[in-house]
Image (cartoon, rainbow, N blue to C red):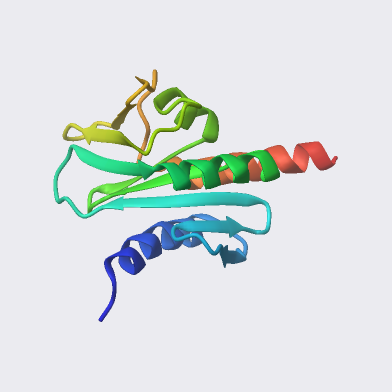
Length: 154
């Protein structure tokens, strides 16, 4: 039997694979939902099985700590939200901190909603994003990160 997390995490990984021209190395970390792409960009995949929004994503204290530690180690960490069968929204660490501040609680949540033919609106316990998030935010964020790394290396 295929587990839910395998289907939803797989959806995020396949979106990356299909959007990027070259090969990707994807390594799973010991914490569920955490992966590292090309040994340089950690991602944290969260999913909601709800068919329609709003989609609610719970963040346990331990997961917030790991996400923060990965940011400190790699300089970035993408949080990827698989919104049922609707689509995928990805945000950078600095955007996650607008939603859930540095005062980690036992459990906090992020809520995402989208109107028909619109982009995702994202809010959390401590605030909301100023801009909406597109359905192509995951490959866009990865490609922007890769470009930024190339510029730093030159």
